[in-house]
Amino acid sequence: MTVLFDRHGVKLLQGDCRDVLACVEPRTVDMLLTDPPYGMAFESGWTAAKLTVKSDGVRQGVRVVRSALNDLQPTFHPDMHALVFCHWESWPDFYDNLCHLFSVRNALVWSKSGGGMGDLRHEYAKDYEIILFGACGRGRELAGQRVGAVLSHKRVSAAERDVPFQKPVGLLAELIERHAPPGGLVLDPFVGSGSTLVAALETGRRAIGVELDAERAEIARARLERWCAQGRLGNATTPRTQEQAGLALEP
Image (cartoon, rainbow, N blue to C red; front, side):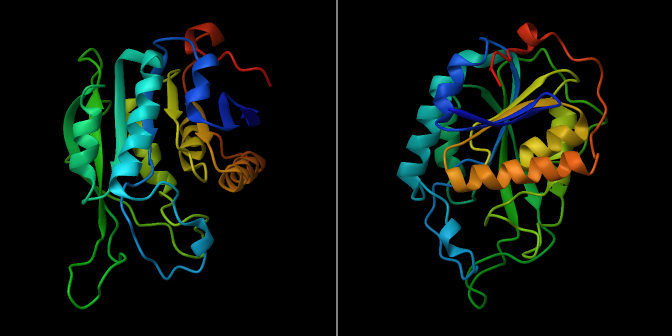
């Protein structure tokens, strides 16, 4: 496992996410936020076809996610909140394979405000994604006022997109602020182009992101460096000590 970025409480690692067990103290991850291999076969005319998501296919994708999260379970805080992106065709499989790790409370809907891949003449536009929301316990409430389960954020434009399924930082920042306590630790074991880590920087949270693919990990590193150079760092209350946060990684 290689450390590519380690600043402002945010770490980016390139390697197998299961290896993070050696670096994170038990029961210290306050929020799991991830967009794992979708578990679906898809065809796209997008020009960066070489970045097609690895581990596509329902059974293979779900096996990858279940195996990884099973191994990472010892790091979960007893009141950890989990938010896992999935596709409308695969969310039942993700539900069945993850509900033993945490109690699934809601299926949120990310409304992308139009567009979407698919058959333009015979299908409705695929302009939304499912986000499974679960929690290990009931000791932590959602921050802020209660809102509906439909979250509206425009998709990342093709001109700004580094990978096919890149999530908008604004959406991830909203989720982090509602589910991760100030000073808490966010974990994304399938961090892709690094949007979760950018959102952590924006909201002043600490985070660990892991990406297996070296090309995507380098994209994430470059994004984080740009974000820091622009001085777009958020504010949060004083974080817990490194030991309490579970950050045992060496730079």
